[in-house]
Amino acid sequence: MMARSDPLRLETLRHLFKNSPLKDLDAVTSADYIASLNHGDLPRWLDALDKLPPVIPSSVDLKTQVRIGDSSDASREELEALQELLQLFIPWRKGPFTLFDIQIDSEWQSGLKWNRLLPHIQPLAERKVLDVGCGNGYHGIRAVGEDANLVIGLEPYLIYVMQFQAVKRYLANYPCYLLPIRLEQFPGPFNYFDTVFSMGVIYHQKSPIEHLMQLKKTLRKGGELVLETLVVEGEKGYSLTPKDRYARMPNVWFVPSIETLVCWLERCGFVDIKVLDTAVTEHREQRKTRWMPFESLEDSLDPINQSLTIEGLPAPNRAILIASIPD
Image 1 (cartoon, rainbow, N blue to C red):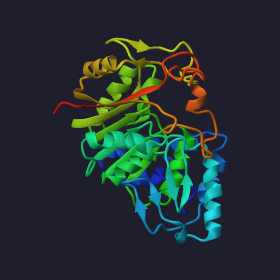
Image 2 (image 1 turned 90 degrees about the vertical axis):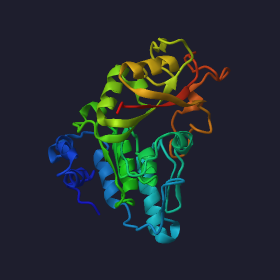
Image 3 (image 1 turned 120 degrees about the vertical axis):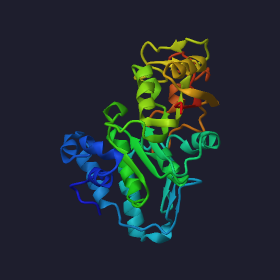
């Protein structure tokens, strides 16, 4: 069991990279930084992490899904305790995860998005990966399943950090880590990562151009950006700017046309820009479950005209693009 003095394993991460180019992570992995994290539920969540049963998985599959162990690895009492503790981290938005045959049915069926992009991106084997706004780290864990050498996720919302730590408890020797920070807090190093994911993040940024420039700085020459975002139909230069909310979300600032998004990437110096996929968000991919029982896609759409949001705006349509840093 991890000592309470390092509940998020940040000290462990700092020591791991002490003599590497990632040594500058000291600023956001120190004991002082951990002490500065403030959330009313944090003590309860940390207590739940402490109580997770010390079960050793007999098998792990991160390539076709996230499946860790099976029920024969634990006693009935351990399985009951594990399920009860995992439910303390609701809402589980990304997933799904299966831990010792306990199925965490997340709001997003994130494997569908993963399957859409994986055949088209550069192979992740032996690569260093940064996942920005990673939530509970689902896609980063899948990247480890593709034999990535290192995956670091950035996620400021502590509930999702806790979910990652709960799963990571049973993936102790796998090279995936998560920092409870935003991209703008990431201290570098720059020009280091081979692949950078920014999925479902840019439309939450007040300055999408600044976000793209920050992403660019993290990539080595020849590195690849995988960008997934909401898009709308429109000419080059057009971007929807919601007056208030979009699909009930209060923090959506810009939803560009694909042509506008490509233009943004070009202006920021990216090359080899390709649109991999566009898909209307469907209920099979995003919906309520008992592991995420709050408002979801069905509550965000016009009940009569499903092509519109509840605010009368175009319904969510998502695109995946890749782009590179010039050699």
